[in-house]
Image 1 (tube, rainbow, N blue to C red):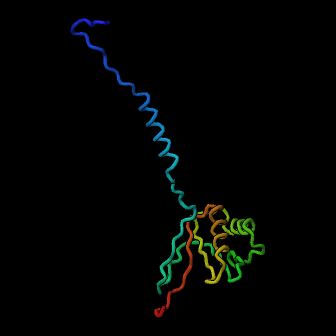
Image 2: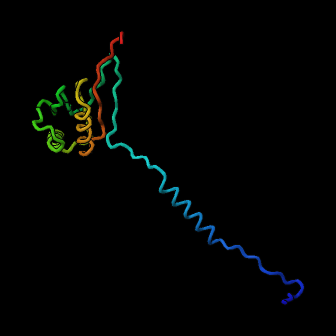
Image 3: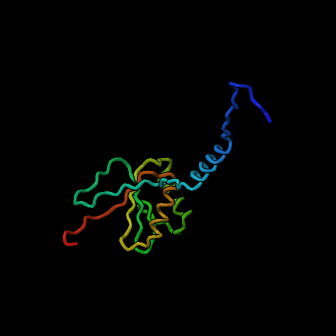
Length: 141
């Protein structure tokens, strides 16, 4: 039997290594399960659907999509409706000015995929100022 001298107490020690391990596992779980928000590449500014016309300051690039999904950059038609061809036509029309406003004018009955393809091509080229053209709503609707 061990007898300690009077006034000598055993040193109390807390082992924190298991606590650190548990905290690291919880931190990893939190980081891996958090959903990270992926901001969109193309910022869309939708104009108000009012009777007033939007101001047309500066130079703008007009991308028109008709009812059948055909693309028109400015006044010229893009013959092949693929993403690569549309991207090349937009790059040629815009030059190096990626900061200019792009007005997307799509027919109301245009297939949704055609509009998404146009927006994808604009995003890949680095255009950030996109406006979608609308017409005023009728009072009866």
